[in-house]
Amino acid sequence: MKGICKEAPVNSNLVIDEEYYLTPHGSQAYLVSRFPSPLSHFGAYQKKYFKVIENEVGSTSECKDNDKNQDNVQLGEQLDLFSF
Image (tube, rainbow, N blue to C red):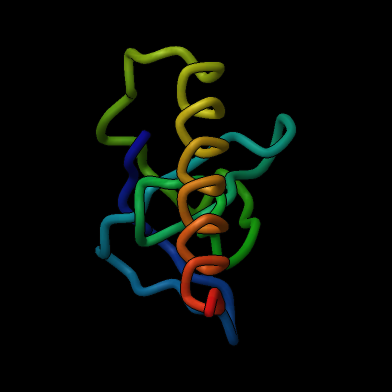
């Protein structure tokens, strides 16, 4: 899902009025990312700092499977880099 930061805590990486990708993290927080993958988050922040602007319809299990496949591709690319 996507959201806009409406308030930023002191000394955080959040920028007010900037759009972020949000992944639920418990009942009171989101994992926040500038990219659609939940693996690329840069922190967990309370839900009160965001206004949700877009909810994704896809299932979370599909997203997790896609992330696992992406990890396998990246691992394979890294191994190929060091093959002689």
